[in-house]
Length: 409
Image (cartoon, rainbow, N blue to C red):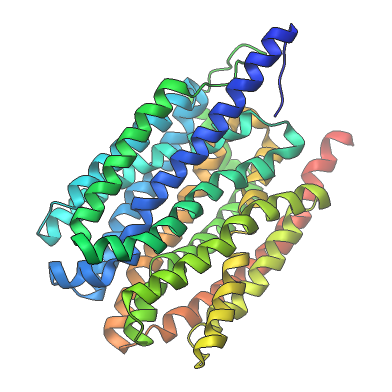
């Protein structure tokens, strides 16, 4: 982690604050991952309890994703203007509180309202959390730093996938939700007490609202946003709908699906950081992005084509490795080209389009399942979207090369 000490004592304090803050942000992501992953994993039980269709189940995810998407640019702007620390706390506290409320509701419309509001609080975690984490690392290691943010989320998914079905079998899905949410609320206050923002070497340059609209002028932002649309479409198809595919189309139990999802998250978690490391070493983020999407195009289709369960598990493992392999590199490129001053706003801009993709995927795959009786065409469509992403990665490589070469020229 980078420091800017004036004395050895100050260096020690800053290093300690940096380690504590990075560890707390990652741990908060672990706790957030518990409740975020609980809905898709326990969806078969939630559907039966609330007596809803696959389309309505998709609407639950779409509601949270819609408000999460709309909150991306405001959250990024507020992070750049006022600092990311307090926003991250408000986001985790609000999300955890509303997750607790979700465990108490008995009507579909109340579940929709809860998820809609919860998504807005979750938006306050993403761009501010990424900016806070990356600020404690030197510029040449920020793709790796950004990938650490997701490491915590996938660790939470692993814990939930292994323990959630057992907890649910003993006490029911509602009690499980309430317990996990209470842990999140407590963690938010621990974070508030001990996390620190990195002291700024230079005075804060306040962003004006016009700075947000300036981002629309950069073609590279639109290409990155298109890639983000692809990225989160794939992520949503796997994270939200794969458990239901395994239970409804493949006949596995919720407990077995939990083990499969734990395996998936176990492969995704380290690959996320590895992808950032590879990108930093190669100094070629578009290559990592395009290569990952080419593999995902194949595996997304094979998920619904392969019949053998052992072979299906192999496909899921390969898919999981590359699902977020390019997360850090993709979020790095706008900051790399436009500068760290607009890091939060640029991240929010890109993630807005990512979650538009997630919103459409969450709803559409539910409709496809209800209409066709299978998830096959939905996942084949995801494979086609990945191929579009490969083409966009080629365009991004050329634009990035020109943008980075312009100052030197």
